[in-house]
Length: 397
Image 1 (spheres, rainbow, N blue to C red):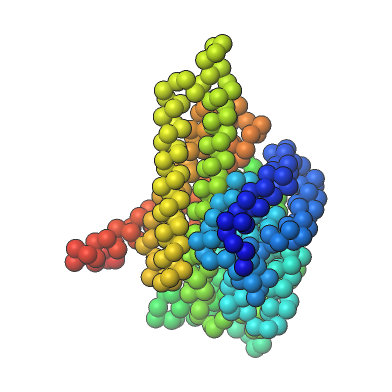
Image 2: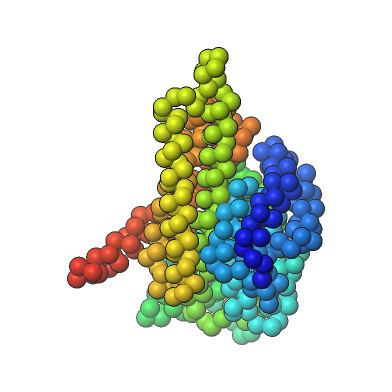
């Protein structure tokens, strides 16, 4: 396991020298050139020992603790391509985690190992247009047992990176009569070339539909038949497996957002230093801009400490015990992210809303940070319930 004090400078240098030069293709929507560049950069990431940094050494990763990977995730997050180049991107990273924990030997051979090597991509299909994504225990997609198969029928959307994915991990109801709503769904590995799997469309996000890793899709399952051997874990365990995936994943997301904030603040400061309102009077001489810089610096540093503290709690006590801490960082850091991006855009003026910088890209694609993996309002309620337990109130009803 590398020493984190030695590893972080290597990651930062790699992102600066190898990853950031590819961003021009992303901003130009030149996905063919982007994918070729990513492929070459991924080969380099393997050579320099930065591949799968989120995983244990036994799985071919770096064996970092969750707080240590959090710091690496921040460094990778300063570019929208950092995690992709190192094979630590969502949803693949989360799928790797649940496959490592729950896959059979055959599932590991056919699905996990190619994912670990970066030979294929995957997606995770849970959210449905017919139901509020904030309540993942309510699903209409079903998986009906038929002999040695399950037959899946349903409709999903915002299935990130489904475009070009080799397989999906799908949440579907198998036990509709189960007393607990959290024991009704199961998870299935569905190769995307299975009859009955339909990639309907890439969903435009604020006008940008993206491609591959940088897209969200609508998909349908119609009489989609998969063998029982493709079920992950026990029947009815889908929700619990999903929760295992989401806890550490929120640490990863929040530290990535802090990386975005750091890059946005750097762009803000550079613009404030270089752009002159009049000869000899750069933007940074204006008090309003100085306040934006100071507020951003304080908020980013505070957010980082809050996330690293939550990561320590998850590492020590597990995600279930640290649930309120995870919810707190989810809504707090997402809010900091949007404030810092907004200040950076305002400092750039009209330039900030163009694709000549990364700011408008991030503003479009990271506004969803306050929605996905549970909207802010749900996580605030989780924290409030936990606080009020100390005052003898149960706010669950």
